[in-house]
Amino acid sequence: MPIAPSFPYYLLANGCGARLDIPGSFSSEAWGNMIREFTQLAQPRIRRGTDDWLDHYDGSHQLFESQRSGTIYWSENLAGRDGMSFLLIATPDTTLEELRALKAHLYDTRDVVQCTTYRIRRWITFPPTTTA
Image (cartoon, rainbow, N blue to C red):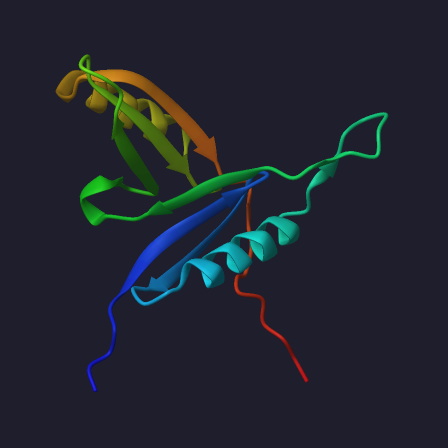
């Protein structure tokens, strides 16, 4: 029986990140459960002066080698007729010089409407390992 392909993704929440391979056969229910569990592991912060949790899931992004420069992956989306919107995903090892160089390259070679950076400050082992 052939092995189903898997696809590399970053999960992002609350300044945390995890890199994992998602099987192509992953169900939407399993996806939803995984996102909830990951967001809880990313230690949501409590809003100052209230009992409200700031549980912010920042998204999942499929990783493509063609959208990688050094330690930075990016995702791109059509932002309308004027061009593209880019999200640069910087790891804890990414330097400011790397970010500046990639942004300059994208602005020089692409029709950039918006370019934002998400900085992963902490990696989370996901799915979590359990010990007996």
